[in-house]
Amino acid sequence: MSVPPFSPPLRRRVVRAPLSAVGMALAAPGYVIAMTPSLLPRPIGLLIVLASVGAALGYAVGASIGWAWRKLPITSSRQLHGSLRLILIVIAWIPALIFTPIAINWQLEQQFELDMPGTLASTLIVLLASLAFGLVLIAIARSIRLGTNSLARLATAIPPLWRWTTGRGPQRQYRRVMIVRVTATLIVILLFNSAIGLGFNRLLASYEAINADTSGQSQDELGANSGSTGSLTPWESLGREGRFFVSNTMQPSEISAITKTPARTPIRLYVGVDQAPSPQERSDLAVKELDRTRAWDREYLAIIALTGTGWVEPDAINSLETVTSGDIASIGVQYSAVPSWIGFLVDQETTQIQNADTIHTIIEAWRTHPVDHRPKLVLFGESLGAFGSQAAWNSSSTPADVLADLSSVIWIGPPAGSVLWKAWQADRTAGPAWQPVIGDGSAARVFISSEELLTASAPAGKSIAIAAHPNDPVVYWSWDLLFNRPDWIDPPLGPGVDPNIRYSWIITCLQVGMDLVSGGEPPEVGHNYIGASGPAIALTLSPPGWTKAKTIAMQEALAKYRYMTG
Image (cartoon, rainbow, N blue to C red; front, side, top):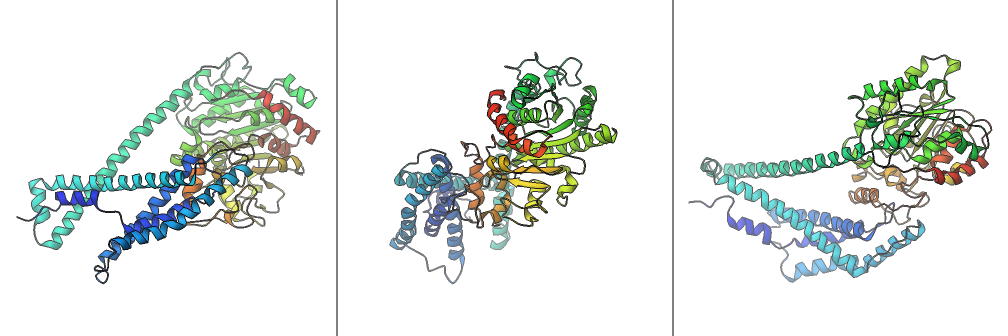
């Protein structure tokens, strides 16, 4: 009787087979490359994880090369044995050992330059922890392989399948065994995806519960805002961030204390994601709220493109109300309750569809009013809100197209995939990718710091302001980094970008991806734009009588008026 195609010795080979010498050798350059700087310094945990992943990827490449080498007829008898294997591995890892303290020092220098204090472990700890975690990753990969082989072996124990895989010659037998193995692999992948889907659904349910939570919120100061008596969007339907938004309107006395001029009571309107089933219905409801509050009679009407949870940065809305002396109505339409990073990774279309619908619907309603009786339209979007709102246009749109109806546009930290940001970077007329000159530079300007926003000259007419830090991973991470070198990594590098940054296939994508979750950035660094909204809004709107002194006074006062969110 022939030996079954999935016999116990195979299991032993999978689990107990020695590690590939070529794989272990190439794990060293993978480890080294992963330790190089990226946009932000990494805390010790992420540094070790990334170094481990780099080593594991290097091992996978080396193991594949070693396997292919063994399969070639001309090289099958020329294998590394005993001491030669060890010598190869040691030679490969000596430079990695020497490089480790250099890489750690780079991280410390980057922390110092960006005012992100932190500590890193010793060279030995980083090296050993990275190797240990890398071996765990390799063991997991081998376990998955063992699982598929075991599943295939169990399948061939079924008599009909056993006869099918062992009959009609060795070539056909081999092909049929491979079919069983591939099928088993697909089953394992399906089970893995199902487990992820179940966990993701539970995560979504937890965010929906947070969105419904009303603790710490009050209806006492709503005025005519959404959620008030007579509003078409009841208090309970607004979502947690919406309720914070409408219940913290700047008061005329607070505005006047900053501007030293009379002020009106601003209007804040909001449509929750649960208020209507479709994006268009929510947009239509937003227009009805504008009609209800006579928002068209205001000097300004601001469309707020929300982040994933429906959050509006307090400094942004407070600045809009201060700069306009309260003669403004602001409206936001919620499209989800999950954080922006989840929405960006798994559901980009939702924010694009909702924001595009909202912008188009409000502009259409705005056009129905007499030309001399229309508010100035302002669009504000931060992070995922900037990403979603840019979908109202296409990649060939120019600043003039965007400003055809809008008077002012402020985009803060637009993610790399934002339609216009990506296109305008690529089509820039001058400047580096991190501060492109768009067209003739008059209608749309890119600012890399709050200081630039404070010192820039006011626009002559309609304008777009884009705030984007050169070391913001949200602004520069995309899947394109897997195999395409980005031009933002070419000299001259932007302020705050480490001069030792290098591009490598796959690894750079992982590094900048890790930067997305590193956290802890101070103002003006990474995706922390807490000081940018106010100056960007003041510069772009620049109403008559507004001065830089007022912008500075507003900046100093904003912290006092920040309200709780989340």
